[in-house]
Image (cartoon, rainbow, N blue to C red):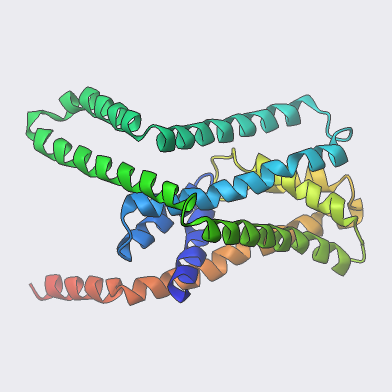
Length: 277
């Protein structure tokens, strides 16, 4: 349990410094793989986690639209929102297709590698063949892991749904606490609905941790129910709690994991060897 917690917290740091928070998922897969979990199975775990998040957020959208439908009827907001939804939908369809038709996914990856192989020369044929065998094996691991989720792993899936609900509830409660601290008591439902919309908008940005877009989006949406006199400090405090604190704590845990992996001592040893030469 402690190791899993370290992996999750450290991945929030990487997610915060990579475009669209994509690096966090790759780090989780890599960290799980280093703990003797096959890459395909680790990918299924991480994808399952993200699917639970997506199900929660998108199931909350009707409620958010009911609260903000009339207020945010702006064509720019609609364009951004529809783009985010389309992106998530495409990813969701690809994942479902990969689970439903694993052999088709293998065929697609082989065709892609066949198209790319001539660009790398004939000497790489053996390496590409070995890579494709590994990819096929990981696709099988992914498919088997998803099947387990919906068979003997149903209990774990239910616990996952429960903890996903708890996580997002606590995450959304931070804004309410910030506003209460500023003596600007909000409607809890309105604050929750605003953050559901923000969660969708923040999927798109190619900036690290959605920096810039998150602040502008928050200022626009929060202005509906937050007094202008405290809007700026509200956005800064909310962002500090939901983003910068993740960077700080995640960075500390990441350094600990690097130290545990003896990477620092290995680097120092290599440097000393080179200097002595």
